[in-house]
Amino acid sequence: MDEYGVILTFSTGHAIRTENVLAKAGIETKLIPVPRHLSSDCGSAVRIKQRDRQKALGILAQNAVSIDRYEPL
Amino acid sequence: MVYLDNAATSFPKPQTVPEAIVSFMTRVGANPGRSGHYLSVEAERIRYGTREAIGRLFNHADPQRVVFTANVTAALNLVLFGMVQPGDRVVVTGMEHNSVMRPLRFLEGRGVTVTLVETASDGTVDPQDVASTLDTPARLVCTLHASNVIGTVVPIGEISRICRDRGVPYLVDAAQTAGCVPIDLGKDPIDMLAFTGHKGLLGPTGTGGLVLSPSFDEKLIGPLVYGGTGSRSEQEYQPEFLPDRFESGTCNIAGIAGLSAGLDYILTRGLSEIRAHESGLVHQLIAGLEAMEGVTVYGTSDPKKRTAAVSFRIAGIDNGITARRLSEEFDIMCRPGLHCAPRAHKTIGTFPGGTVRLSIGPFNTEADIDAALSAVAAIAGK
Image (cartoon, rainbow over all chains, first blue to last red; front, side, top):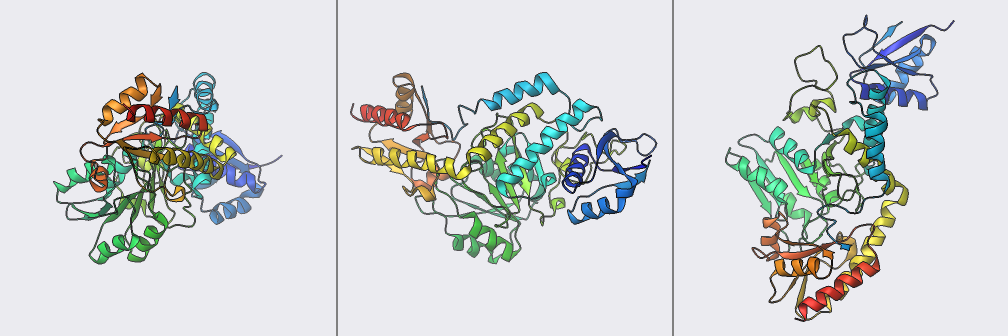
């Protein structure tokens, strides 16, 4: 079974930007409500597969997409 | 009815614009960025997609650096009041709209110095005249991109490079040009571009914004409005990141949905095609007006150096009467007077009487211009 992680961002707009940039690079994403145990923020976060973590974070850095942090689920 | 008041607001809009607003309000309806439920996310996708479309039109890479405001005046006020401090100097041209002049005249009372770059009587700005004002320190250079009175286009590319060389931030008021004249933020180092959504971008009133270049430090501008952004809700302090730093309070998301449709129309039809269409009609209009005895046309007749706002006067006839007769007798909509730009009218020598302005949009036709010319000829002949 796949293991997932979540990219926390500063806002839902940033989450959508994150999702768009990763989708263009062929990385599978899903926008989910921010898990309550990770943040008190009430917006959205981007779920990715844990095995894509390194590639995804590299792509986001290349595209100057700022994120809060990555957390395993 | 012939609508020739597009410089005030464009009309009609593409049919997709009201459709997008109705679709949003009946199908989505939620508050963008305020929750994780799918309707809120859908609203945020619409808002984000509109930021991306603005970026495509202006060749700007980062959608998060597109800040939405209520209109271009709000965007200009955000920069002028958020950035300029007592003791600072601001450089503007002699063609500015009151959206810039009124804030600056108020700020003069707080100890800000305003330097006016005089222009030729046709509104032409010589970039070297801007450069010569920068031998002493300036906080900001702010120019419009085209006159709302006579349509003259300001060489913002050259001015932007001068400002960049001198290290002075440059703010462009694109109220009259966004969606009508090409603007390339990838090529020209314009730090801040203020735009309105309801004119050339063909969206509804109540939309506009500010585009910040990647190299501009947004912390140079303090927010004018503080409050909820849907982000960082655990903090009682304003977020510093964009666009939230400047977007407190629920935005006009229904309007932004309409603006998105307006942008789609422009990007699909093509800005160059719209520009060519309007330029052809401008040529027809100016040639017809200049051929009439007693009619004076202001500004340049070169379509490459102007927008589709054409100002004229009929000798011996009050501009208000001309406008009323155009409306009541000929069903033609125009705008007489000073067009919220007394400074520009002083520059071109038409203060305080003003002019009559006919402003063309992407849906006007040669028949519209023929009708306007016949009407002006009839009024001038009596």
